[in-house]
Amino acid sequence: MENQPYIELKNIHKTFPGVYALKDVSLSVYPGEVHALVGENGAGKSTLIKVMAGYHACDRGEYLIEGESARIQNPNDAIKAGISVVYQELNIVDSLSVAENIFFGRLPKSSFGRVIWKRLYQDTQKILDRIGLDIDPKRKAGFLSVAQKQMIEVARSISMEPKVIVMDEPTSALAPVEIETILKVIEKLKEQDVGILYISHKLDEVLRISSRITVLRDGEFIQCLQTKETNESQLINLMVGRSMDEMYRRKSCARNEIALKVSNLSTDKVCDISFYVKEGEIVGFSGLMGAGRTELAKGIFGEDEREKGIIEICGNVLDKNSKVKAVEMGMGFIPENRKDEGILPNLTVKENTTISSISSCSERGVISRTEERKLTDEMIKSLHIKAAGQNRLIVNLSGGNQQKVLLARWLAKKNLKVLIVDEPTRGIDVGAKHEIYTLLDELVKTGLAVVIMSSEMQEILGVCDRIYVMRSGRIVDEYSAQEATSEKLLSSAI
View (cartoon, rainbow, N blue to C red):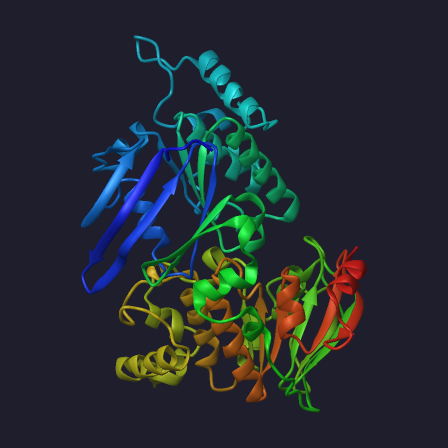
């Protein structure tokens, strides 16, 4: 690491109407360094990235490039200065080739305006070789995996010859094997003296690949630590002001009555599944990627066609392949893919909250807007949803608050008996995780039965009363909370 940082932000302040987004925040990135930026949703990470990338001008503070004051007034200025950003949301055009995606808007052309395809593919191959990515430049992006598309985003950044790359949650939707690919590329970039600003909620990754870690909380700089001198518990404490043990502390409140009973359920993706969930119980499903957790959740709710088997809710048999009947009988389902299958992005917080319970706000087919607002207010207050009004579009909320709105959607129903939650805390920060766990704990105390599908071992071990392990679309083991250990779950999964 060189003595002088390539980029340095000093004492940055940024306000929006009614919000002090950044207050006296400082951060630097050296050539060949991975500097991690962590904090809860709403801590100011995104705003700081946008200041660095030229989307926002700071109200006060200094922006330095190689020790000299820099005028970064827009994204093009940042790119010219060697600052590139790989955002969490993929911006890949499936119908275009890998090469066209990497050089989108910058295709090499002749003096007659024709694309020089040979040079395009050659230039693309050089970049792919640089990061060790074995993909045909002519391959259509639509045939790539999510991890490969993420790598194409990185390759696009590299094609601009950056000195610093900002990576915003690059592994949030990836499987463990795919994550390794991303991390190996980061190591290659370090060797080439490219500085990396790495933003992630996955603290194990942060501790593994970074040399320094900056913590933000509520828009303020808390501390910059040497990675080798800190640990996950200390980071969580700095981020949210409480210890890790507090996140997973709950007592079982399971009752004797069975709320959900599944007998010999088979779909085209899971086989002969039988289990039960009592009222007031949290039951978890663990397993490796592809084990069938999500497919089981969809099979129970009726998203996937049930080939055979019986599902009972509080003793009443659920009709085959009927989501409508499942909802009527008191079942709710929060899918793994919050963005594409959960939220309704073009609708407001209010509309997303009441869509499953609109009948309770209606009389003779006419919706009472007053009742709808009242119900939404109740949900916002009880679930501590942070939103600038119930008419705000849900896409403008943080991931944790979007997840709370999805919870509110089902809790607003008066007859909810069973709630299935697939990856309840994927892509949200540790503070929001604690709030989600607290909410689930409060819900089961009222007698609600909760089913959790999760790939996070600590989550499964920490919040569930019983745990089923899946492998190849089947249940292979069952453990009580007292019996379960990470070693046992992993052994069963493998």
